[in-house]
View 1 (cartoon, rainbow, N blue to C red):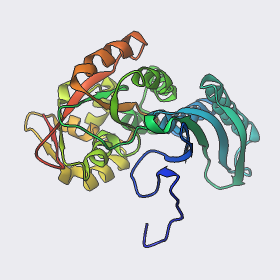
View 2: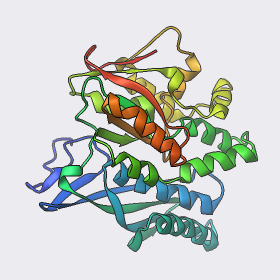
View 3: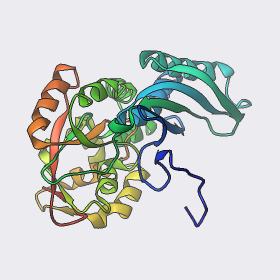
View 4: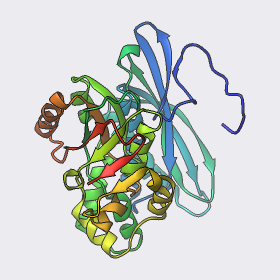
Length: 319
């Protein structure tokens, strides 16, 4: 990182030299801790819902690494002179309720007065050192399974613009506030090779991280990728967040789109997600079974969206 010397030791299993969702430190032969931190500005107007979403988003990194979240600490930036303290109370209550749902205990936190409201969590989880999941370890022939539909970035832009209906706001709020716990519990029954969660870099951005230096490529079937239908409508109206353009500029050289792929779909694959689903890589023979079990668990929009291919290296083909 910019020539800085980063402290480390032999017990660090996943650290700053990787592009993974969280850090992992070995405690013993059968126990490692996973640590992550995430916070952001409000993406919905309702303070309580914002607390739910921010907490679910922070907890997601632990699930993506194959672990179980155990403790959390609040991170708060609050404009005390501009907002009533009752707003902060509602945000914190949302976070607490989501932590209770995840069976996570709050053990502290830190707050500062700031002109811009921000909230999130620092989270610690447990995992067996042999069960850690990272973004790497892809195998040619593996299938890719996505557990939540895309489009939250576009819809959040519509919300900020006052265009989204009450029904759409309610649906996308529920989606973003949904824990990835159930998906992770199902996933952990299978021989998963790699996993990440889809957040600010969009689907293609996170897939690009998975194949850098992997010695393989990816092929996606755009018709199988779950998309919130309202996101397509809003994208057609030009309601793409700035993050989608940034993601596209950074990663588009790694992507080859078939001429049959709708331009709106191309944009939505770069759409930055908030508290998105898990992207699971596993053997082709187990992929359909995983999706079936996810559906039985109520994660009904889970789908096989693509596969790992031998060539072209370092490229994502979207058909």
